[in-house]
Structures are given as structure tokens and as C-alpha cells.
Length: 95
Image 1 (cartoon, rainbow, N blue to C red):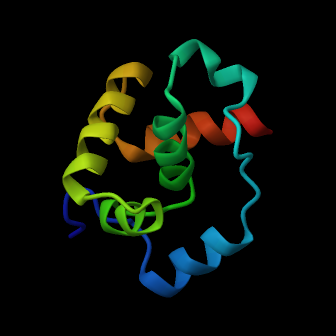
Image 2: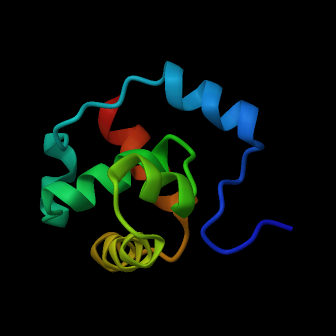
Image 3: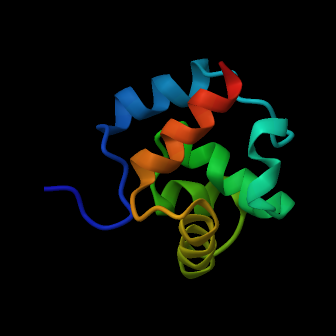
């Protein structure tokens, strides 16, 4: 079972995905309607890459608690309740 906020991928696979994906650092135009802040886009981008909350916190130099709050705001702005739905929206926007 995957714990809340954890990546659905095992660590080596998640690391490989994060290192090989090309998601833009700027929010794609197709997602601008969600009015994400720059930090929320950074979190969204890492969610789409398969990163869990702990990894996101480490990569962005913030606390896991702060990441959880960003994830909640992102879910609200996207109108979803799962990381997979956020990732799917990002992948559709960059295709």
C-alpha cells in the first residue's frame, strides 16, 4: 500500500523518471486557467514526475508540511483529489 503523499513508483524507477522527463519549468499555457503560483507549478511539475512529498520537500528546500499545503491547494485548483489526476493534466498540457 502506498502511504499518503508517497510516490507510486519505487525509488529507482522514480529517480529514473525524474531524471529523464522534460516538463517545462514555466507553467504551460493550457494550465494557466488554474492560476497556479510559481511555487505551486514547481510542486505540480514534481508530482507529474512521480515525486512524493518528502522528495518534493527535499528538492525545493522546504518542509513536508508546506508541500502538503501546496498539494492541497493544487488539488483544489485542479478540482481533483489524486496526484495521478494532476499528473495526467500536466502530461496532456505538454503533449
